[in-house]
Image 1: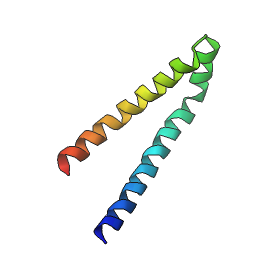
Image 2: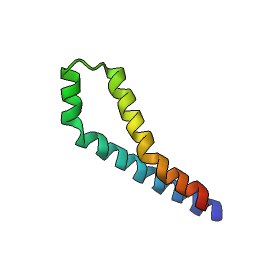
Image 3: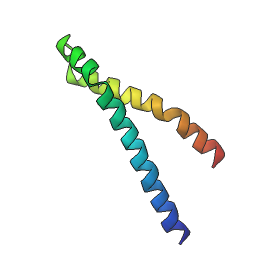
Length: 68
């Protein structure tokens, strides 16, 4: 029973994390369009998004690892 509750907890946390990252990207759509217009390649923009996601998730991950 505990593994079921833990599994659902992980699903909820994953959903919240993905929603947050999606919101961050949607809010920056005009900036991304400007970068594309200035000549940024899709891979450069992708690396920027992945780097931003890593920075946004690093602190909560460290806190969760040290508390749990």
